[in-house]
Length: 205
Image 1 (cartoon, rainbow, N blue to C red):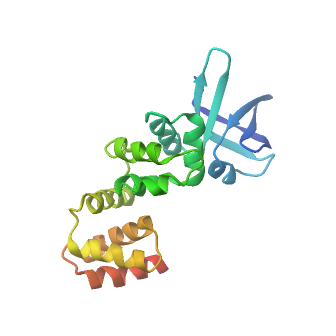
Image 2 (cartoon, helix red, strand yellow):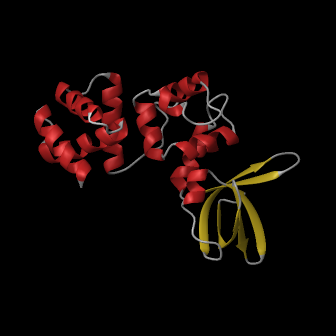
């Protein structure tokens, strides 16, 4: 199986690219988000690859990094989500958006992706809540906080701060991320006013 391709970006189509690896052109299917992160045609290109083998064809799906590929595989573990729908979701939502949507059980955010109806979105946030890929550093703290908020077990100060930042126009992911970073500085006992003030400073930086 092909797990990685490194070569020269030969061409970019609507949803595929050609990577020239030592004179062999590999057609790779990508999400719109991945396509937007590519270098210019003619420049070196490296992609994480997921290979799908069927009776009549072999398809390569390309990603900017291993984490995006892990999400692609994880999304397809949900009934009703195939490669096409998984790519549509990844075209619409970043990995951070997915973490937030699943942790907060925000099916409406997932349903923004083309081809994803309410029932599939509901299955995604329910079935993947305890299966999200392992994250490290700040992302892990942010994901844990989002889970706590979604489960209603976060402190009142934290929930009030996230709600207040949301009322100011920030997304749930941005608010949870800012409060998570703030907690690391201010401590678990910080009141909501402190979290809001420091959170706004974090978001403005």
